Image (cartoon, rainbow, N blue to C red):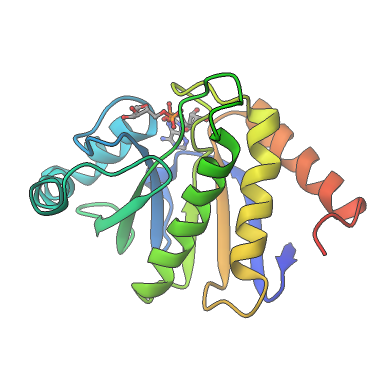
Length: 185
Ligand code: APR
C-alpha cells in the first residue's frame, strides 16, 4: 500500500457507488442536477435525497463553478457524504484545465476534512464525458491529493476507483513513475 505521509493511497477498479467509505466524490456539472457517467450512477444508486440536497444548494448558492465542490448527504449509498465537484471540460489545455482539475481534488479533500471524514474515494474526474486526456489527468490527480494530505491530514485513506482496467493501468503506471522519479517529495 502506497502512503502519502500517513495517508494510505489505494488504486482499484470498481464502481464508486459500491465503496464503503466516508466520502465519495462525484464528477458533476455546475448545474448539480445530475447527468450521465458517474454522476448518473451516484444519483441512481443514492436516490432522491441526494438530488434534493443539490437542489437546496442550487437555490441558496446557485451553480457550482468549475474547480469547486459542494458536499451533500449520500442518501442510500454506503457512505456518509457525496462531494460533487465540477471538473474542467477539456478544451485543448490552454484554458487553465490543469489548475482547475487540481482544484477539484484539493477542494474535495478540504470539504471531506471539514466534514470530519477520514476516508475519501475519487473517480477519474473529467476524463470521461469532459474529454480530459487521462494520461495528463492522472499525474495531476495524484499530485493534488499528495499535496493535500502529505502534511498531516486527518484523511487516513484515499481511494482512486477506476472504471476500467485501462484507466487503472494508467493511474498505476503514473503513480509508480512519480514515486520512482521522486516527484512526490
Ligand atoms: N464508478 C467509478 N467511475 C465511474 C463510474 C462509476 N460508477 N461511472 C463512470 N466512471 C468513470 C468514467 O469512466 C470516467 O473515467 O468516471 C470518470 C469520469 O467520467 P464522467 O462520469 O463522464 O465525468 P466527467 O468526464 O467528469 O464529465 C462530467 O458528465 O455525467 C456528466 O453530469 C456530468 O456533465 C457532467 C460530465
